[in-house]
Image (cartoon, rainbow, N blue to C red; front, side, top):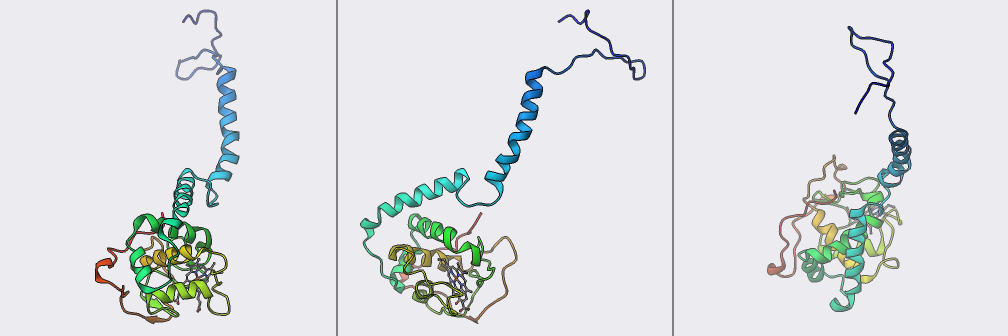
Length: 206
Ligand code: HEC
C-alpha cells in the first residue's frame, strides 16, 4: 500500500515522524458500540440474578425435565429411609439443588454457609437430630416462621429432595467463612439401610 499521497504529521519523536492514518469509521463504530453494549450486558448477566446465565438455564432445564419424571418415583415420603436413599441419587439431587437455589439461598447462603438462617454445613443443629427432622423443619417452618414453612409451596417430592440436598451439605466446605455454630452438635446421619449410606459430602455451590 502506497503512503505517498498521505500527510506526514508535524510532530516528531527523536526524529521519527508518522503518517496521519485515522482509524476507519467502522472500526471506531465497533469500538464505541462494544463499550456501550458492555454496560447493559454486564448489568443483565453479572449482577447475581439467578436464572440468567447459560449454566443456570441448563440446570433449570435439567431439573424441569426431572420434575416431569416425578410420576416415575411416585410420591416420596419425608422419612429417614427415603431421604437417605435420595442422598445417593445424584440426578435427583439436582432437583433438590434447584429448589434450594430458588428458595433457600437468601437466608442460608449459596453454599449453605448461613446468613440470616443457620449454617447448614457444620455439625450443629437446633431443630434437627435425624434426617427426617430436616423435612419436618422445611415443611413446617421454625422459630415463629423466621424459617418459613414450605409444605404448601413445594411439591412433596421437592420437599424430600431439597432435604436430601441439605443433608448432604453437612460436612461440605463453603468457600467463604461459615456462620457460627447454632444449636447442639449432633451425631452422623443415620440412614435406614447401610447400603444406601451416602458417599462423600458433595461440594455445593459454585
Ligand atoms: C426467610 C429466611 C429463610 C428461608 C428463605 C429459609 N430458611 Fe431455613 N431457617 C431460617 C432460620 C431463621 C432458621 C432457624 C430457625 C430456628 O431458630 O429454630 C432456619 C432453619 C433451617 C433448618 C434447621 C437448622 C437447625 O439448626 O435446626 C433447615 C434444615 C433449614 N432452615 C432449611 C431450609 C431450606 C431447605 C430452605 C428452602 C426451602 C430454607 N431453609 C429457607 C431461615 C430461612
